[in-house]
Length: 277
Image 1 (cartoon, rainbow, N blue to C red):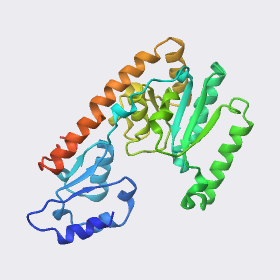
Image 2 (image 1 turned 180 degrees about the vertical axis):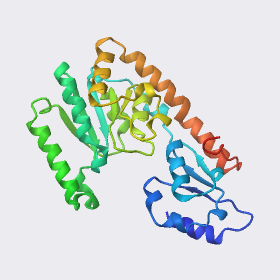
Image 3 (image 1 turned 30 degrees about the vertical axis):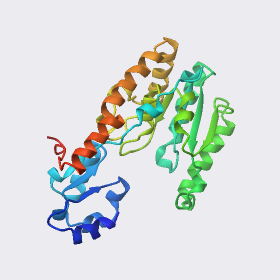
Image 4 (image 1 turned 45 degrees about the horizontal axis):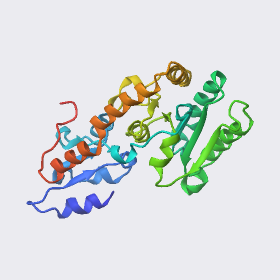
């Protein structure tokens, strides 16, 4: 946040300054005021987001580095509950750009194939965020989506809302597939957490998704996603797909690896290679 401006102003010659930039901050005013000459590294969580940062800010390419989000793979590795392969999951559905409606499209399509499919949504409700609920277009969107859940015969009784909280590892025991249907994301940790828990990620192609997740997990649209999920379950490939997903996520985003990247950057001053290198 803007405290980066303070530290840049008062940085001593013998000090290093590392700034971790959140996606939403990229469009704020303070980065435009940052004295980038005083900054040793700006950390972004994905290659696409780092490229976007360079494009918008004009900062030197070698100062914009990628250190991905981490996944506590040991904490999340818990046995799945029976029938988890028929349960879809979403974590955090506000604001509307998270596109719960697309997740419902996937669920409705799946339930036409097999009524055992359900969806668990772990989230704060949109009205819990004043800055979302005060916007008429956001309120209209969620009223429309929630009305659909009540009235669509393919969805009624098939969607469970669970409260926001720290019990993600336990909650994931009953989730087989984690959906990522957003318009855009900087990283989207939920599919990686699901993979680490022994589940399968399922993403729509938001910008940069293929720089974080293997294209194998990315589907062209809601129908294609539903068909891929059902084929995985019907053909008995869920366990194999889950094993592949966990191996990929642990290798790329496991706590041990990401901790080493941060240690190299913060303690040893070893800056990761520039984006595009």
